[in-house]
Every structure is written in structure tokens, then in C-alpha cells.
Image 1 (cartoon, rainbow, N blue to C red):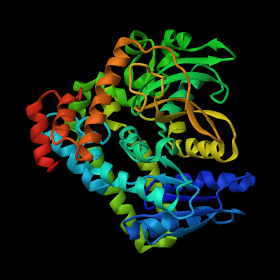
Image 2: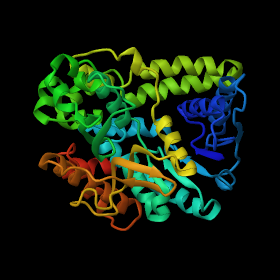
Image 3: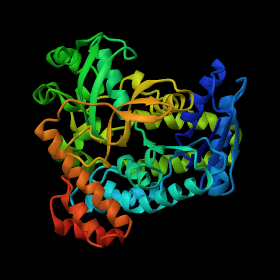
Length: 440
């Protein structure tokens, strides 16, 4: 199969390639034999290709790798397209975060003001990509990594229908850590997870029909042995009766996280902008060292992930088992196997709601457990949402819909409405100033 990665110069592309190499070692049927990279920054694409070449050294059957000169060429004859673009680069993220913080609100790239600004900038490009896929690779499946993943997937679905599916590594990481804390094999558990991208809850965890979650919630020591337990604290998780996605820390502990971010010497975007800029500069000058430099940079990136939230929740270091990085690439390959080889599996994905959450529009993209087959990804029925869960989902979905309308030029007031209605932005006046400073 041919896989095309848009944003092929992205720092995390080697994680996808690493998973492809695992398939090559196993000589897996239906595996990717050709990997096509496309990036608007040709220097970054060349650096990543150097990393991949070193990573594949000595691996029999490793997929060939080439860099496409333009988007249409990259898409032609693709079986799968991974969309992992970053419109505006890390410099755009830095600007989004600082504008929001200057107005006293959180600006994380997918949550709050940062997510809205990033969406306004990204959606027109994502929509153009969707139309170009239809023109150049109408039978291809698009797997969207691009943030904000939920609203980007929903916008692209208006063109591609069910042939675009969004993925994220946060839910699968949460399930894995919760299962291990409960003493179960993560590969054997079943689970109920529902929400929006970066806003969801693990509400059931079963092994051979036996419910594990209540016991885990009642065991304070086990509950605080993994990342989400440390982040939210046992008392709050027991009060919720569910395990929230890590990004809900921005909502539940807004004051503490905002204070932590404002007290930091640099934002996450500023750290990544400096770190990645340094990596690409050094690797471009010494391509023979690209893989070594990437490994070192990746480890530092993982060690500092979620630093503001960890500082706000008492300050703690990530466990060594959580520093491997990635997770989303394994979800993506499982999805590809399911669709291309009809290997049925259950994955947490971003797909159209259908009737899964009756209170939401059928076309609204949600993040939930899906059954994957050659027909695509079908969301499974889930238990009714509690009022607090549903209320937050409805409000944030209204924000996402407003951003989509604004980016499409359908309503000149939609951007202000979307930003002002976000739970982390507490004033239409603040929203107006943020949009004005961002030129949105």
C-alpha cells in the first residue's frame, strides 16, 4: 500500500515510520510498501527523511520513502493519507498562546482561545486538502492527526464523508494506564469512552464482563499511581465517578493551570519552537547525525510534556513507561489494517455521531469507541451522558461549529460567538480583543 503523510516534515513522523517498520519485520499482509512525504518546508522534509533512513537501516522490507514536490503529486494513487499539518508552524502557536495569556485566559493550542485561533487558521487549508483528495485520490481514506482534531475532522467530513477519520493518542493512553493500574491486561479490556477530541471520559472498564472502574476509583493508592490520577487527584476523580481525558484539567483546574502557565518562563509553544528549531538546524547541517539528534530531542519533549498541568497538581515527573512517545501511530495502523484488510477491531476514534449521543446532531464529530472494518469506522452505542458531561460537550461543540462557520466565511460574527462562548473565555470583550490582535 502507499501511504502519504501531509506534514511529512513533522517531528513525530518517525514514530509512524517506526510502527511501519514493525509491520515490515513481521512481513504483515497488506503492509505499507511506499511512504510519500509532503511538506511546505522542504528542509524539514529532507531532515525527517534522513531520520527515517537511519531508523530503517538493516530492516528487511522497509517501505521506500520519497519526498513529493507538490500536494497533488503526493496524493495521486495514495491508499491512505495522513493529514498532520501545522498551519503557521510553531511560531503560530507561540503567537496564539501569548495573545491569550496577555488577556488573562489559557491559550493551549487545542483548548480555549488557542484552539479557536488555530482552527480559524487551519480549517481553510484542511478543506482545500479534502477537495484535492477527492480530485486526486477519490478512493483513499484520510486519517486526520491535524489539531484541533475534532473540528478539523468535522470540516473535512463535509467533503469526504465517512472516508475521513480523526485519531488521537490521549484516549488509548488513558485506557492503557487505567487497565494497568487495575491489574488488567490493556489488550483484553473493554471500555466505554465518549466525548469530543481532548474532552472525553472513560466511564467503564471491564475484563471478561467484570467492571473494574469502581474498584479502581475506590483504591486511592492505585488511582494515583498513573498520570491522570496524579493530575486530577483521587478526591476529584472519585467525585466524578469517571476518568477524564488529561485535557479536561484545563477546564476543571482552570485557575491553577493558568497561574502555572503564567508563572513559567516560557509557554509550551515557545519551548517547542526553540527546541525543534534547534533540532532541524543541527540535523540539516549534519544529516548523518539526524537520527541521534531526533532521539535526544524526542526524549526531552516527552519528559516536559504536560509540565504546566503537573506543576499545578503538585509537581511530579512522568513515569519512564510514558516516555516512549507516540501511541497515535499504533491507533492509525490498527485503523488501516481494519479498513484495508477487514481486521475487525475496536478503537477510540473521531467520527460522525450518527445516533450515539442523541442530543447532538448526527453529523457532529465525536470521539468514542468504534468498530472498525472494511466499511470504515462505526460508532458503538454508549450509556447516556451525565448532565455535566453532556453540558460541556454541547457548549464546546457549539464553539467548534462556530469556528467551522467562520472559517468557511458563512457568518462574519461566528468567530466572535465561538470564542466568547468557550468555557475558558469569560468575556465577549476579551474574545473581541483576542480576535483583533490575531487578525482573525
